[in-house]
Amino acid sequence: MRLTPEEQGMLAGEQGRATQRAMEIIVTLGHIYEAERLLDVSSVQVAGVSYRNLGEAGLEFLRDWAAEGARVRVPTTLNPAGMDLVRWQHMGISQEYARKQLETIEVYAAMGIQPTCTCAPYLVGNVPGYGKHIAWSESSAVVYANSVLGARTNREGGPSALAAAICGRTAEYGLHCDANRRATLRVEVRCAVCGLDEYAALGYLVGRDVGGGVPYFVGLSMAPLDAGSADVPQEGTSQDALRTHDALKLLGAALASSGAVALYHVQGVTPEACIEGVRPGVDLCPCGIPRLVIESLEPAITALNASVESIDLVVIGCPHASLEELRQVATLITARSPRGQRLVSDLWVTMPRQVREQGEALGLVQVIEEAGGQVIADGCVVVAPMQELPYHTLATNSAKMASYALPHAGLQVRFGSLERCINAAVTGCWPTHQP
Ligand code: F3S
Image (tube, rainbow, N blue to C red; front, side, top):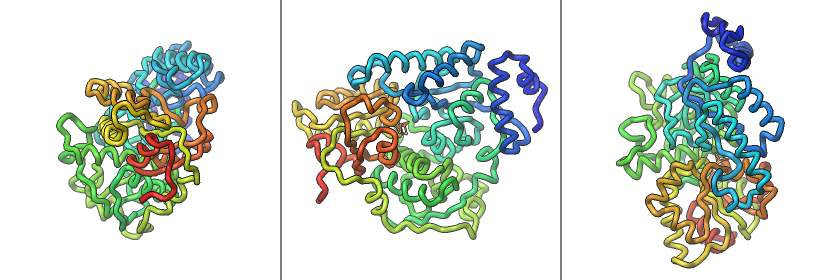
């Protein structure tokens, strides 16, 4: 592998032990994947934040690196923690856990990392441009960055992403290279796919089939991303375009959890399937690759639903909810639960803190809280210390949450539309036979 003189100096320790340690990780990965050189990265997303997953050993590792002088040199954001950093007591989190979780965030912040605590950093300003090389961890964020923003990243682990942030480099292999961004599976969708849960169900089915490959979807009827822009929705973005962003978010998260997908294309929608000079059906999705026909989403619905009727907790916002999703939840609660009537199940809507603040300014958070629901910033059920909490069953419209809730949080799951989830929060149950 060719290193520049500056990179050789970093590896030799000229910029301190912390940078040297980061370079050792990046260069080792480069050797393993036979990269020829390193690339500058313009942004990083670091996972490995929940103290439940890190434990004392992980926190000690971070403390050591910070004490050696580790500081990030590119804009770097942070994945969700195991709790709302401010309102953790409302979630029933113990003081002992909260103390360790807050210390973890402090260590990351001391390295210069923005304590955004979200798996949707693109909703809070970490929006890498088209074609930019980045180093992101968190599988749902990775697949969104590659597919919807057109940036370039591999599925980094927490330590390799942190190392990339500290030395500002990543090795050139995998999805940083054009050749690996071509489709490996053509997916022909022949059934209606409308609600967010249906995009999630589709992602779950295709992820199981494609593994770590690159699916190319045809037959999906979606509004285009704004005027061909690969950016996140801005004020004034049409409702249809907002729904496309949210649908792609849930589709990608499911693809990345039932499979190991880090990039997908949707004909006529995602940026690489739209760019001039590329013939999407020819260059990006070459003839002769395997084909998968989806006639029904039913197999996903069956696989993701346990036979439980009583629901303790409803979770919306996996990946973290956008303002538009928050608005939909508030609208459904207003319609289904008249003022003053409390929800029967607990309801958690998880999102970035900035989105919570926007929702508060619009009165959306208040609608949910007055009904007894919680609008949780910074946190995620899958990495929260759920064993400390009194929940056994969960309902969600996210296929990723549905797949992870049992193995990671010990919860039996119901999966379905946002409407069914809010109904479950209002009534406390998930009727087996729904009209
Ligand atoms: Fe995000 Fe947690 Fe879901 S990290 S994608 S809310 S499992």
